[in-house]
Length: 272
Image (cartoon, rainbow, N blue to C red; front, top):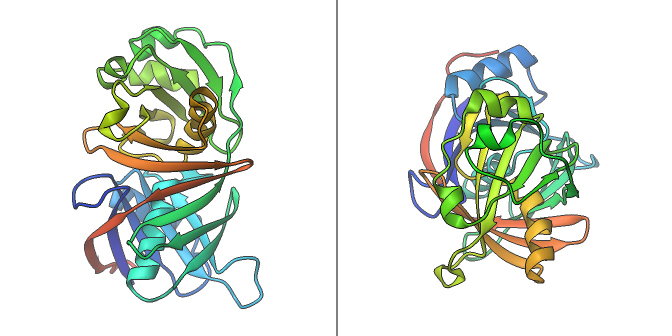
């Protein structure tokens, strides 16, 4: 079986967020094998997909695994999977996926960008858990819950400089949310090409800091669109690798647009 490493939400190799992508010929093997492959790949997520029969609710079935567990929603590995399908000729135009969080679509554009259609995550004010500011190393301006699909705390901080300088206590941070923490602030200078900045820490699923997180932007899009009064924004994720996610809020759906680059194309020899 072919396995690929794709850098998502970037237009250059070694940027954005790398994901493993494995296209299977038919039904998923056992969960244990899928988890072992994801642990071997050892990226924040590895995507597994197989084609569905004609007349199904979607074109492909899609699952995502971190090195430690299966997750309910992943944007960058979905973008990476759609990129592989389109660059190999396995799909054209719009392709749909049946996933844990519902039916997702990915549409390739003429300029090479891919737009994902994801459910918008609800953003509701929440009490800061005990120890959050100490674990994060910064005092929150506001704290919000992101709903069941994402399972993160959205933590607004004072400014972009504070977000970029974070060096959290990950063990302590793991006690503050179900999946992790999205730290965010308004862009210091929107003339740089983005409207808000974020960093994402997911120690509960084996990912200390995720480089560029598509699912987090289904939370960030409604939060910042309400603050800034515009449905279409660009987010910058300030990890070491960095990446840009263009967001468009469409009510209960959020569109995430980005590009991807295949960096490794190889063969998986360990069969299920």
